[in-house]
Amino acid sequence: MTTRIDARFAELKQQGRSAFVTFVMAGDPDAKTSLDILKALPKAGADVIEIGMPFTDPMADGPSIQAAGLRALKGGMTLRKTLAMVRDFRKEDNATPIVLMGYYNPIYIYGVDGFLTDAKTAGVDGLIIVDLPPEEDTELCIPAMKAGLNFIRLATPTTDDKRLPAVLANTSGFVYYVSITGITGSAAADSNAVAEAVARIKRHTKLPVCVGFGIRTPETARAIAERANGAVVGTAIVDAVRANLDAEGRATPKTVSAVADLVSALAQGVRGAKQAAE
Image 1: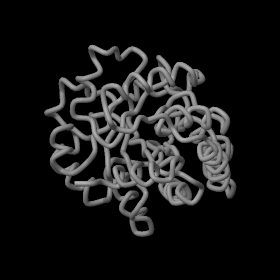
Image 2 (image 1 turned 90 degrees about the horizontal axis):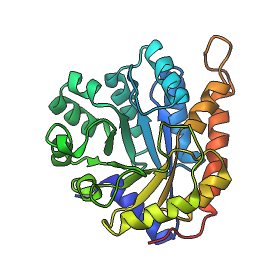
Image 3 (image 1 turned 30 degrees about the horizontal axis):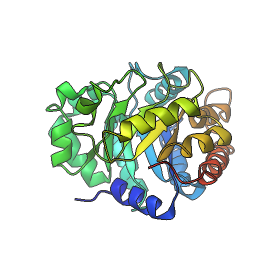
């Protein structure tokens, strides 16, 4: 079956441009503001949206996204409420692909079968679960694929040609290439190194390759989009949320519009790129 993710990348390929993928944390800084931000993203130029599932031990995330997750948890965000947020989003937008990104523990506690059923019903299209390696595919990856969800895998600068086939074996939707060695928000992406890495991954797969970690400006987004099928921005967006909260960490009248303005500028950077390498 063709998912919204598959359809969106096919559409973008016809248009001759790369995807702009945005990341936001569910429930940051509160449920209502988070939903308002989510609804604003496609209008601002997001082609695919990743939604973080708040978790108490986010080992792959840098300080900004860790703090966003803690704000969300403090505000009472849960995995069930995250799925409810997707359902609310789908009332107005049935086209933009939604990917849930996070860690396996909350899904395990929820119950895999129930989670997959509820996620699919809510309108989720794919999953990125950073702490489940290919050796654990029977836990969630295979069931997710059977449920009609894309399971998107991370490849990193340390994923060599020997390891890459295992990483790609059950991957669908797109490949998420982590441009730096380390946590989110810790360094800037090197577009030349990214170009080499994307070319290497494409020797092993026909899936689109999107690049994330280390993209904070329209200029960097454009440079990455010229070398990959998509540019993923998370930390810069999460930082824009934090910068527009009041002293108590609550949303202000500027919060949603500030995030939308940043996303619009980043989207212009991506859309100004030449067609991504095939």
